[in-house]
Image 1 (cartoon, each protein chain N blue to C red):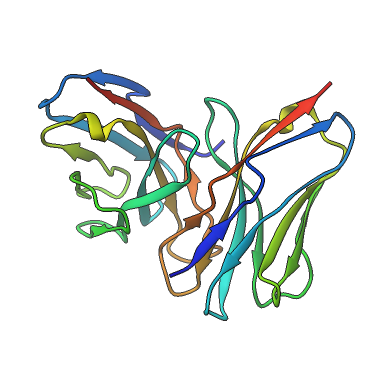
Image 2 (cartoon, one colour):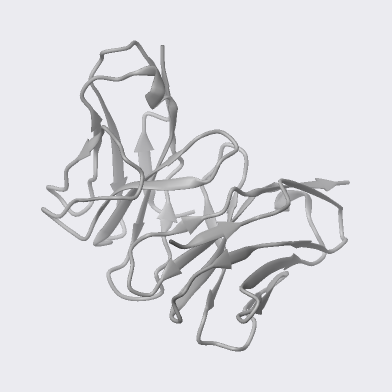
Length: 113
Length: 114
């Protein structure tokens, strides 16, 4: 399996709380991505980054924000969690050049009560 | 906008048999990549196989092969000699050569019966 890690794996939190989902990779990949996946549904890209200090919004509108201060780290933050944020969040990375393969982390399953 | 359709929400196969998962896509691009990803229960999503649109030859990875029909915009996955470890959600995905975005289908849940 790829060297990409996400913490926490599971999180239950109350409405209005601020949360940060962590994602780290040890492969030195420039590109990193965040996807949202509802149960039994396809993945939707919510954020991506080309490298340090680069962040872009994906197709799916999201109230979350991301930062990329270090190559290996790409955290996602929700300033005020709501029940509509309940979902699985998957982080991925890929090399700047090459085959476009994306390596996925194990995901964080978030429940907002 | 590009779309990916997987028409089989669930499939089942007997161990050691062969199964084919269907995928169609819609695009006006000529240069793109197609992927099959596997997501086992509670485990990381991993790439199974990749096909470049400019290649006519179908990709093969051990027991996994694809039938890529560019004109029909079809990209099916064949799993031969199915094993219990093949049980998972399988996602078909598309990526334009000029884009960062992977477009996923809704997935097919594959069950392998012993």
